Image 1 (spheres, rainbow, N blue to C red):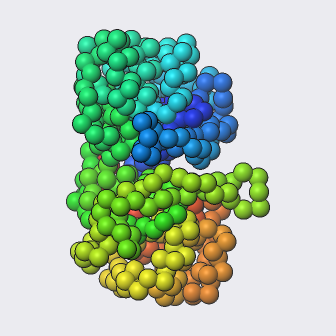
Image 2: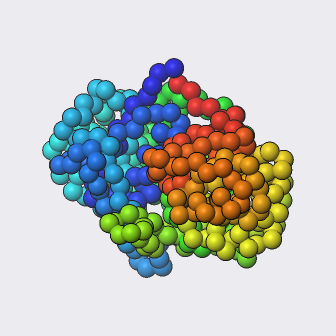
Length: 387
């Protein structure tokens, strides 16, 4: 099997989801992903921004997570990568004026390697002269500039619209992640098997932003049916999320995240019809653990040995359901006492991205562990991505 290598070019105030979702999803599928930013090196941080429709004439913007680069821009050689990912947000507005970025992107385009571009990042492709005669879409206000660059503009029907033209995959926003990541994997020569699964997500207000959307869209991109529900809410309703980050204090900070749109109705749900259960972390598990229906659902999945994947504080729900007796698991370290009192054998999350599988149960400590978390769940579900 060929080890595929992908380059992701980002910058300060790239859109939060549009950096992290493809970064972690592709790693979970077994690809090597290097994230770089001009003027920065491996270990440096890029600040991200959260863009969403808040009922105004354009998207709102608030501060997102801090994204840690894992490679150094000045050491990158385009020839050593099989594909390129360009996140959106505000960063592309200035990256498109960076000669080194434009030169690098031009090399990918000239070689005909798969390129994914989302939101505003098509501006970089325009600067590289890579859109002449090519069909593409983007966030609608970017359209006139792409037309001026010679592109065949495709007006997005909605924010999830994805356009594929040869090696070029474009979308207007992170709502298109599932389709454009799926198409990117195919363009890299990948095949996906075993993804005909139904997966249920237990959501609530102020769950951690990454811990719901990264696994949700990663599993959708594989071709799974993924349904997200919340007590007292229906399909189309929203759950506000929380951005948890370490910023030098004694515990993590919390800021507002994206609003997550539910796609199923809690009261209509036939939970036993699902093949697997995913429990995001954040603050929501503290009160979801008090819901009798949720506790019954968790017992069903565990007693029937269906895959259950829980991360961070999500394990509080497992503890409340009394399903951890004698089970090996990890969680966010502050939750250790709850796990031990519930009869679990505690596994230290060292490093913090370490995840564990014990039978049908996958547990992780924090969103940094998503590549392991998702890949271990894929193993339990029998889903494979091969190249």
